[in-house]
Image (tube, rainbow, N blue to C red; front, side):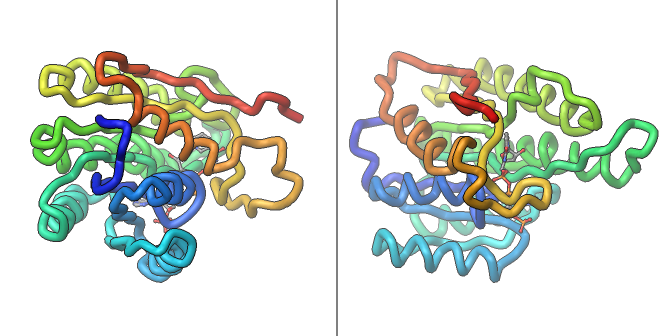
Length: 238
Ligand SMILES: NC(=O)c1ccc[n+]([C@@H]2O[C@H](COP(=O)([O-])OP(=O)(O)OC[C@H]3O[C@@H](n4cnc5c(N)ncnc54)[C@H](OP(=O)(O)O)[C@@H]3O)[C@@H](O)[C@H]2O)c1
């Protein structure tokens, strides 16, 4: 990818808030055409309006549940119809359901794996034709829970360990097309994750726009170099 990102097209799952919205803002500030998706069209529309007010650009909203493959196929079709190319995919949508294994329900297990792991497979599989054409960039948002274990996190750890493995294997599959693939593994980020409400006591955490800056830096990196797996954590945890 070139240093100038203006006119590129990005698709960000889970773009209505949190990390996805932070990445959308950083890309919009670089002149990238941004499509955001989630399951809630009202929240998407609000997010798009806030980006439009800040950056004066139109943001395309797509209602899609990543656990449903046809939703992601439909999202890709809509983007191709609108812009004719897709250069950047940020597979970010995810959930956190935490309980000890004795208390964990099959619903909690299934929705965590279906969203955080199978959802990223759906997004990747649906958008590969666009990424091949553009020699594009796929970034997945995993977690430090993809390498460190936590109590009450059997489902979340399993989904994120799986996602790190998935992304690295996909990176090896797609390199031959000139597609770059990176997984970002953040520690604590100030978002709505796990029913949290961001507040002033979150200032020690990574902020969503810090990850947006990281994504821009990755996209501008020299084409010959690929940081394929990045751990990122608060520099001064509480
Ligand atoms: N916050 C952290 O500390 C942290 C740390 C490491 C990694 N992460 C990862 O970062 C990613 C983003 O999380 P966040 O912290 O930004 O949380 P967030 O503020 O709760 O945002 C999550 C986003 O994902 C969307 N989403 C959830 N399920 C979805 C589905 N089935 N289909 C489509 N969209 C869906 C949500 O919208 P709807 O619910 O309206 O669909 C929302 O837009 C997740 O993968 C999470 O595991 C977060």
